Image 1 (cartoon, rainbow over the protein chains, first blue to last red):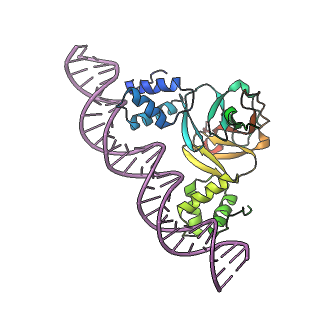
Image 2: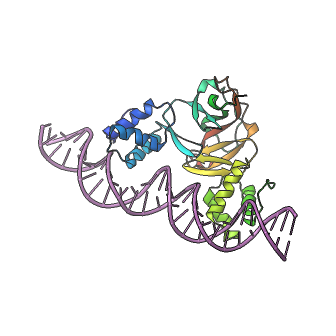
Image 3: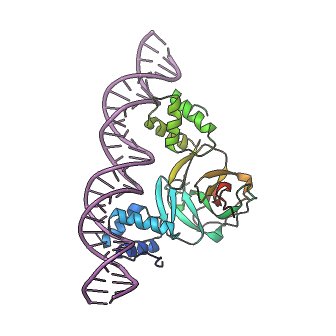
Length: 130
Length: 130
DNA sequence: TCTAAAATTAGATCTATTCTAAAAACCGTG
DNA sequence: CACGGTTTTTAGAATAGATCTAATTTTAGA
């Protein structure tokens, strides 16, 4: 989490970045806002959105969308996701848990730079009791 | 596109379904609204959203999110996506173009029902001229 | 044709996000 | 360590996307 050129470090940004580093789930913008405001009650939504967009543009967080909500993924390592069909929770799936994806040459789109896999199903908590 | 139990067929729904069947891209709700209104100027946004949600719940369309927009995917066959990093366009990628994804047993999440792969890079139109 | 149930409509409402302009903070430099 | 230009923050307004509401209209079966 280094300081980028021309950008200034502020307590607000520091708190947002620290919260994201510690987050194990995938928080929404509003969850980030609430968490940061507990420590620094001044922080406005605009600052949270600005910072999230800045981090996203810098590639330090990912934006994910599941169950109708935009969420942010602070895990910058290459990884995949598991989404529970019932409760909507999103778990990270280690990159190595999924074998390499082999894809044929796609006409006209030579430059495949990255990929990610979304696995869908029922999480442990949502398994039918049977 | 069969009629479901307890649901009535209307001109609005028919037009929306027909538009989606013919759509090669991944339209937003607003694009569906505009297209349908050209033919039936009465159609309200509420009807469009209702119908899209109904189709989504019935598994007849998929919801996708890329480049900050919620879009709908009328392709009900199992397939993947290619997203252009520069212009944001989303192309369907045939299921067979991507090899089977092998994943290890994921502790506590036995029920993996489906998966999809998102490939990212530059589309043909956005290739650097170099 | 009649009728109950369901759908449509316009507009209000709600939620998420961005914009704005003024005040405040950051930090390199003198 | 104060100065000053630039950047950031802030509160609230504005915008956009989606849902809700209550009244009217339509559907489809008898």
